[in-house]
Image (cartoon, rainbow, N blue to C red; front, side, top):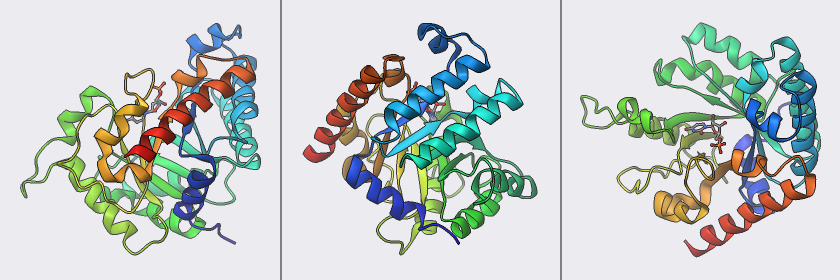
Amino acid sequence: MSLEPFGARLRRAMDERGPLCVGIDPHASLLTDWGLNDDIAGLERFSRTVVEALAERVAVLKPQSAFFERFGSRGIAVLEKSVEEARAAGALVVMDAKRGDIGSTMAAYAETFLHKDAPLFSDALTVSPYLGYGSLKPAVDLARESGAGLFVLALTSNPEGGEVQHAVRGDGRNVGATMLAHLAAENAGETPLGSFGAVVGATLGDLSSYDLDINGPLLAPGIGAQGATAGDLAGVFGAAVRNVVPNVSRGVLRHGPDVVALRASAERFAEEIRAAVTAA
Ligand SMILES: O=c1ccn([C@@H]2O[C@H](COP(=O)(O)O)[C@@H](O)[C@H]2O)c(=O)[nH]1
């Protein structure tokens, strides 16, 4: 049996818990700062601590797959366990793996993260559309079947992204705007919120030239370590701010390993975000 659609589950979680998404990003430097070794035991302890501190409190946890993959199969086993425990504690899990390939290979990535019986099944997956939006079709189809979602890289938080995403097409529209239009079509008619979201950096300044009204969630990394603040959200997203899922990773994680300090940091960000969204 498939799950209720991701968009509906996310809307409810955002309304009940606030929209904050905290990353599980076990950087080698953070493991050291936490007094852990940069090894599988350190990885396991780090991830378990973040899940214990936050999975019952925040709407979304976003493991960054790269930091687990670097430990090989044992790192993937830790990732599987973290996803399972975070979901069991009530958080939605967005797997940040940024997958993208030709359609036939994309189907295998979709099976990996979006098939409801897969060991790494996640509520949503980040995907790259830069082999063409249509190449994502197997992931879109399987997400719909499973009740999962996608976050498509549209306007990323890093300064280098513009050379691809701001490139102007023959029809005068840029690439990022085109991805947003594809997502709006995917989400048409869905209530209360579509399941196909965009990644749009909180670092990007005024985005009023873009149509962010995609009837889907906007995952907004960049708050904290990359320099954006909760106070920037209304200026960046305008009326779409209600559908923004702001992500903070290092900004919260640097307060570990103390569980109370991690919770306090996440609560501070959550409060600032609540104030910014309410005032918008
Ligand atoms: O445009 C993007 C897409 C993804 N990310 C990811 O989000 C976190 C941000 O971490 P911070 O420590 O809060 O900077 C990280 O996992 C990135 O890979 C992004 O930053 N920008």
